[in-house]
Length: 125
Figure (spheres, rainbow, N blue to C red):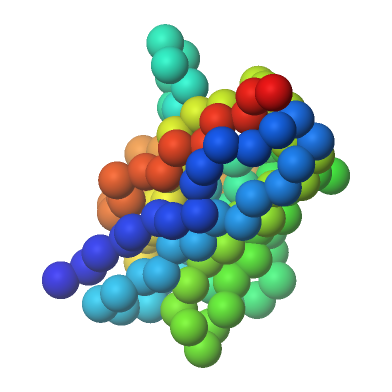
């Protein structure tokens, strides 16, 4: 049974950092991603990578502050978030598909077949 369980969220002050983790139990995927959803807003793409190779992309809103990465030995996806802003406050979701998506397809949530339950990130003074 495939399970994606995010962890690492919490309350942090503006300018602070957090690391989100998403261990993928049950299998290895072709492409994994992070999305987020703020209250009253649509779910938006944050970052993604192909499990093999080095292809990664990040949304313009987080580029230079957030970094997606993976540990193959632990079968875990990470999101390192630095210089956090109040507008980063959202529920962050891990998503995965068995397909090796091309980079231009990373941001489309419909391309992902598996989703975690989400972890809350709140950036506030």
